Image (tube, rainbow, N blue to C red; front, side, top):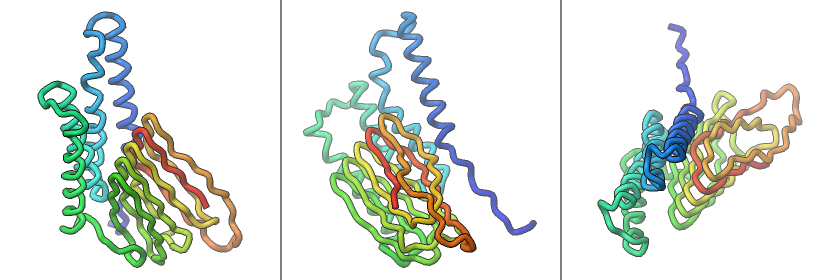
Length: 229
């Protein structure tokens, strides 16, 4: 044993590929008359369930995965007619999910530190937040916004081992991540009806200083995540 640990592979592209293949197959079967027209519209919330299931494989993304699955199950039951809830009746469910995420954080699923801790979780619903990190051993974060947004400032942070990983997720929302000017950004997120954007300037002021790398992965549905200096 050499003491090294292998990082888990990013499953974002795999899950995105499976979702696109399934959607394409159903659309093709619908065009060929093998399934009723509009059949796929009744199962679109399953996308949330698939995304949530994929995130359960990551310890840092389990709280986000649980929220995605809960949201998908409620919307799916409603789409199938098992539940008959209008949005005016459905909105308390979002409050319940927010409470579950807060309990997860309080019981150890994340920390509430704004700067000193090397890792934290943050959940935003129908609102937003602004965090600044100045940790000299920053490892990463797990961010989720549903009908909301967040800003994360890493310009004063130093990454542990020269690399940090952020799970940046958004559903009908978005986020902004600011990084140091010498930071290399690798976007590995999956966007469905949304986008991940890298607007950073790749500048190395000191050639003798190792470059820091930030890996941004996650899922965006009907929203956007932007990384800038």
